[in-house]
Image (cartoon, rainbow, N blue to C red; front, side, top):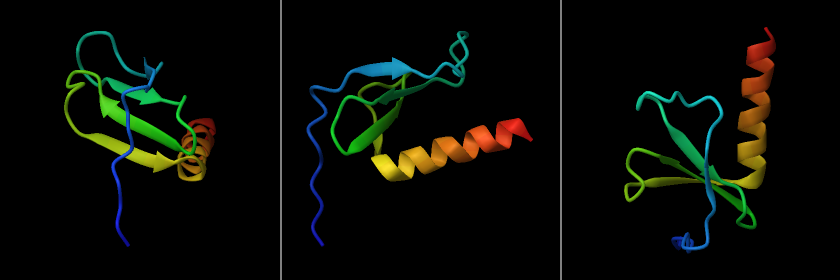
Length: 70
């Protein structure tokens, strides 16, 4: 099955609220693109991007929230 790289030129990136401010762990997501959630390292904005389907991202975030409640 062929895959295509989505056009991320319209992505509106935001830094995770869990990223620290000292240049350490910095994750950015763009949640304004239909059907996908791109994720990147904010220290390397021209670097690789992970692309998640919306439902996979929602499941991932729900799992994190559940883990945090434990």
